[in-house]
Image (cartoon, rainbow, N blue to C red; front, top):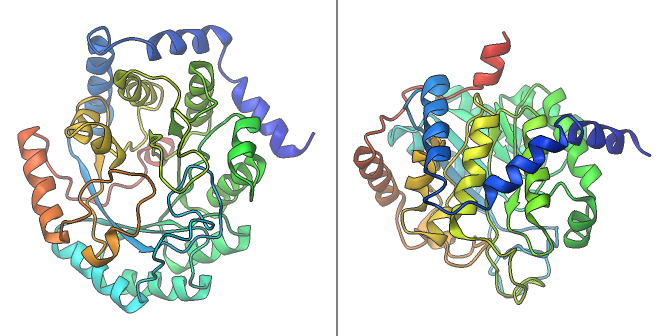
Length: 353
């Protein structure tokens, strides 16, 4: 058994079978029966992180991807996708725009790996850091450990890499180009590089079960992450899973998952990911009312947005960045949630130190 497999088993065994059984029972609750769960998650978020919502402007700077994940709309073998990469000079200007809109973090996301060299990305990071006070999150896939150290040295603050499923057999059946062990090793390398680390999973993957979902929650919690990003599985056309039904879930299961994650991870940042608006027009609002504390308005130019669709029904693809900026402020005002005026660094690390 490899070292990472042993670590995976150790992490999964950190929590007792009784806790897992309790999580499974909570996941199956309907929305009415989950109200007390949501109130508890909201109280924990308020107690540990306050009521502020951190705005992190996301720039989807390329949809080129070398991976063939069976669920993803921009997978390498989907030849119906119009591929693009935004010039790095334009990415820099979009980052300046993020600061103008009052965002304190910019999230640079692409297919895996990014179509630009690590050196080019590092030069972009350094330039943004030299001219703004923005925190920078990268989400560009798996690299050798030395590259994560290079990103950190250039000024990158955080790195997001979701593991998608804790079930090795299920993960490997959906990811022909990488193993779960390699994905988890990358997370360890990211943390070792000194980067704040984010990860998470897809809720309701075909072939999963409530027990699998409980394991996903427990592995996420055992990893002691700085940020946890999760969203519902949505069947994308032109993918091997386009005709496969998701794990049969009632809508409350998605929110129950996020609430449980908040309860088990009181110091982690938890974003209201865009996919929640794809299953419910007020989905992201509900996440913020049930334990979430991060919102990621889209800065990707309108001309590119329609080509970065990881899943169908993605909202806001026809909006300009200015419209997204205004929309998020109105949403938060309706929820009576103030906007954070700081970059929203790791509460977990602050607590440790």
